[in-house]
Length: 127
Image (tube, rainbow, N blue to C red; front, side, top):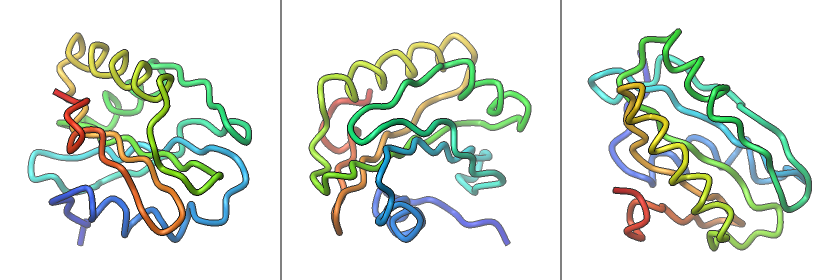
């Protein structure tokens, strides 16, 4: 059975074990169907200790091929502090706009730190 995402806590519990020991930023996309189930999870990019280059075409090519209804993004902060940077917010806004053009909603961007997380949607940064 496919795992269903109901909240940012679900994203954290799914991805934290895979991201907690990472020494570089890793951006993962969860591609969701119309029932918010995950038919596919994909690492989109791996960056450096404190930065990651994200190309929207890499996110949305997979979303379109998978026929996903929506996407949730998540990445880790190797420092352990999940506070979003200005760059995190700017990239998220760019991906939201790209998703709108392609008919794929970006539902959230969850930043995973050391035992905690920040949801940009819960922070009011994803509309």
